[in-house]
Image (cartoon, rainbow, N blue to C red; front, side, top):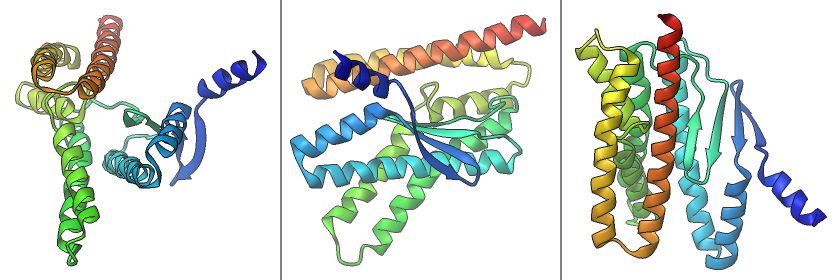
Length: 228
């Protein structure tokens, strides 16, 4: 019982990994558990591949951070989780043009990495090609117009640039309706054509996006009510 309590206590805390240029880097302990299971079940090759996956995800978040800082925003920390990573940007979304630039920086970083790997792979290494394909996949996945992913934030920034009269709340509400429609269509397609494992992962990711999107919309609604 004591051991179980200690394990649950550990899994409930973020693990500090240090700082990069004053930005705190924290790791979700569930990711440590996931990587440990991958190592035990699938071996070193799969473990090393997933280390690369989260390394590229971290670079993706650093790209967001770099652009945000150039535009004058505070970026206290980056958190790395089993389902990806997120950078905390204070005031994100307040200026539509800035949101557009910050959101698109992450996918662009993965596209650049993919191009560099393909050009540098003069030996035709299958592993390097796999890493290039991984970065291309990360870029395309994050560009999906689903809020609160990068594609959804790009869409919100562009929408408010085209229609300046829209508040952040109203733009988010409309994009969230569109995003949820896309998610339902995607889930139905996955139910028909995906394997069981892929379907479970898709359901988990969709649930997380649904909940986070709703929480952000509620936060924006509260801000609007306070300002009125």
